[in-house]
Length: 168
Image 1: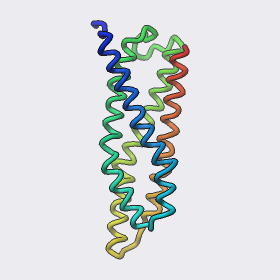
Image 2 (image 1 turned 60 degrees about the horizontal axis):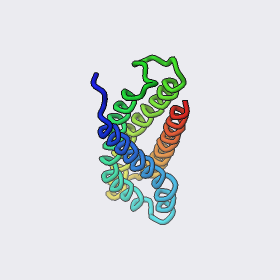
Image 3 (image 1 turned 180 degrees about the vertical axis):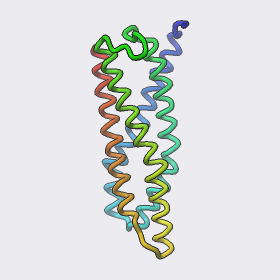
Image 4 (image 1 turned 45 degrees about the vertical axis):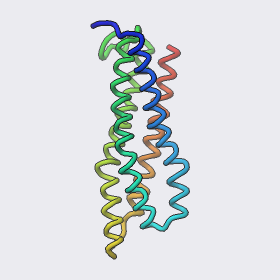
């Protein structure tokens, strides 16, 4: 394989950091500020509607960030002198990167669950409530909050393993 030109590696690092900031900054803002504040100040139906609308806007940014993180992470990994090949965990760097990837796959799984299970259920619940039928948005709102918190925790774990790899 040809070596990666320095400008491409620089671009890869920049895009990786940009995607990390967008992804984890969004999760932190939601988990620590927006959801707790708005849950207290909005009525349940308004809150569920707000969450549905917000999710539709943030979902593409989140998935784009995860895609960029995957691509740029692979580029960076391949260019690192500690990389000895797939499933070769013979050095501390490779071990930290493996654990980082396990946490990252967990983030992808949680994101998929939010996108394709929790968000649609929350939206349906808000529609049922608006139609005067039983409202279960509280259950789905709590589940969304828990999933966002789990994703944020996994993101912080990814950063911890990144720091560990950089010092190995």
